[in-house]
Amino acid sequence: MSDESRTTAGILLLALVTVETGGMYMVKIVRGDAPVTEFQEKFARAGHAHAGVLLLLALICQILADSTTQTGALDWLSRSGVAVAALLMPGGFFFASMGKGRTKPNGFIAMVFAGAALLAISLLSLGIGLLTA
Image 1: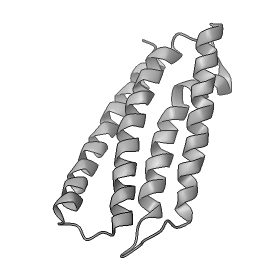
Image 2 (image 1 turned 60 degrees about the vertical axis):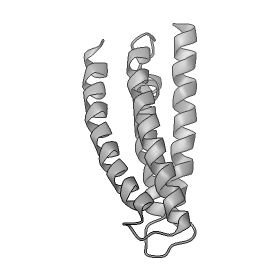
Image 3 (image 1 turned 135 degrees about the vertical axis):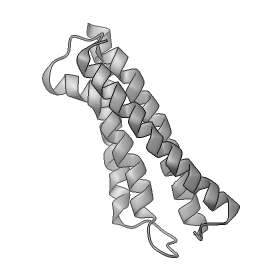
Image 4 (image 1 turned 180 degrees about the vertical axis):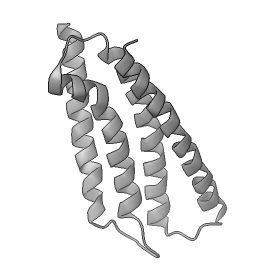
């Protein structure tokens, strides 16, 4: 494993602890201990799920990126793009639903779409990088 992948993987593993903390908040919501609307509960679930899955995918990408010959922007996309998407997409779900009694998303929903675009581009970069290595 390259030094870059090892360092990034360490950061990603530490970041997964924040997902665990978010899980404690999800338990409060499900138990009715956190006053949220149905919309806010759905967005909290989506944000929490995306955070965990995307961080795990970002970990896998570290090992795969070491198997490519990419450099520069393509290497960054393949190695770090999914990790950044793991911040953007869940953040979009959480920030778009913040506020007492909110029943529909605010402008922060754009973060979800930006993260989805970055995720797609990053996975395409990594996939092509693996196929052409």
